[in-house]
Image (cartoon, rainbow, N blue to C red; front, side, top):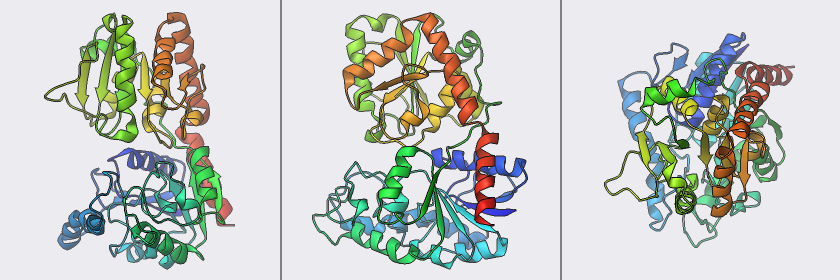
Length: 414
């Protein structure tokens, strides 16, 4: 079976990491998979990047060209919005690779033009890593819900007009993809429900297959060894907050985590609890949370991540909207329970009061209560850690997920 996977990056970003893991899993279990990307950062010969100097130069400018039209909206929020207008070379490249199935993942950043899909002559599978494939350009809709009928007067663009860019992008998708045989894969039940409710995918087949993870690699390592390796204290409760642009991306929820930890510090928790942050360097004027903060910055290797997950007592993921978080899955795989708001794909990953704690959405007091509940009883914490690891082995092991996709491919090709 020959399959071509499409993602803007191969190993950079959450969607890329999930896609690359699946690519390796498919190849391990017999699929002739090629990963076609705009930006290749690995040296993997099975990943096809830009070829030739001209194409490499063009790939550098593509994200800027794609975002150029956004400048019309001077009051646009600082959130990702992709119009997918830039012409691409994908149809020609795909034809050369001669696949039986084309499988799309995260294809923003000027990599993919909306109209390209109708030029692909084989069945298409599209795994959703955010909401963009069925919206008018936003990647998360901030719960505006307009993608269910027709976009316009977009709150992300702050346009104030019914026939704005979001309206035009959604119209292009509806017209270009109406006759394309797309099978939509959602990695969470929340995203599946959103896709089924959308005007773009309401008549398409939608199935749920989660992201997978290598559970032989992501596994618990002795806590004392992990802490000593990172130079972290052995006698403190360690709380981990991990996300790209952890402290600056509003959707990741730092604005909820800070007051939650401040309230814990006022209750005396600051003396025996410390925060570890991945995805942000220490600012010039760091906030005083009432407890010590370890700023790790961005990590470029998996071993460092695994050691850090194993070192901490709890991971907090207070996102406002989230699909199926790699961070949450990785943390659980390494035996670290997770506290998050009960939103998006979080209930898929976290079994409330069994593998972690699902706080009431955006209630700071309940977020703090969840953190305390996870760490305050050592015996309970041990049971949570064991259940966290077991849940990933049962539902998200890479072998299981890869074979679910192979079954789907075979069903499509019947």
